[in-house]
Amino acid sequence: MTSPTSKFSMESLVRKELLAFKPYTPGEQPGLTTSTIKLNTNENPYPPSPKIKEAVEKVLQTGVLRKYPNYHARKLQELIAKDYDLDPNQILVTNGSDEALRMLFHTLVGPGDVVVAPDPTYSYYPVLTEQMMVGAIYKAVPVLPNLHFDFESLLKEKGKLLCFAHPNAPTGVEEEKKDLLNLVKNFPGLVLSDEAYIDFTEPNTSLLSEIKNYPNLVVSRTFSKSYALAGLRVGYLVGSLEVITWIRKLKDSYNVGILEQVVAEASYADKEYFLEKRSLVILERNKLKIELESLGFYIPNSSTNFLFCKPKQGISPESLYLKLKEKNILIRYFSTGISKDFIRITIGTPEENQKLLETIQTLL
Image 1 (tube, rainbow, N blue to C red):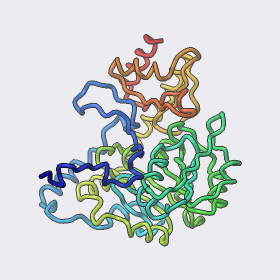
Image 2 (cartoon, one colour):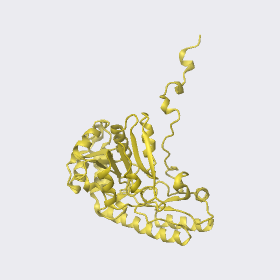
Image 3 (spheres, rainbow, N blue to C red):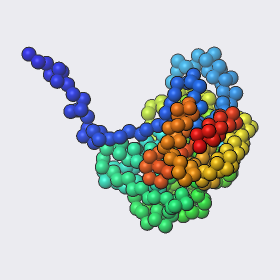
Image 4 (cartoon, helix red, strand yellow):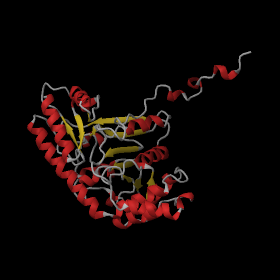
């Protein structure tokens, strides 16, 4: 007699919406001990604040890892709130900014709802829309030929949620603050300014200070890029008390651990180190842009820690990406839309950038 479990098929059990679903594809992650030069996922080339070592040792010595972490990551909330004159409860600390985005989508996006975004922008937004598995619609509005947002077209769109990276990814292009705020003002739903790269541009560019003036605005931040903590997974979402209170209902009980909280606190408080390393990344970004342009690349001005590069005519971006990979240098290639004509290069250390340039010169 055949048992029921002998015919078990997961495919027959999963939700039908999942059958054709394509998950988010992150950049390649070689082993941590590899000699590969990794310039494909916009990680910081410099180590995080040295002050985190003392913070971690204190946690280990006091034995508090046996206890649950603070539910709200209260100390980190307070540090951030003080800098922006906010109520700490307006800040939702999350397991990386991706968790913040997922909670935001779960709060808003229901059957048939429309999510609007420029195209290209962070490629996780359409994935999240489909992950809701409710038949939500993702409306991508192509950027202009100069890679800037098509504000005229975006202003005509209606939806439950509008998302954009500021500065944008993968282009690295920054929009005028007044244009973004006009978009927030006129959009009927909630607007997300995803500011993963905001620290690599000029001060006062963030929309975070405008939350008090625009109740439909939320801003996400991460410790992965400018604070060099991509391996730790800490981010946060900021909005009005009303908005954050609704989103917080979906938070896991203890979504950010004790070690994550104290490391993020120490890193955030060490502003001198943060500014020093930020300046080095910007310096290398500008130098690398000039060098690549001298080789015939077209590169829009970048306000991030990466460059969006179009090789000179006759050079295939995909081929260049693959040839660099053969030389143990990883960059990023997106094969759709405008992005298919470009490669994206994360800013590395001076030594990594020099090796990249020498290899590209050889290949060209």
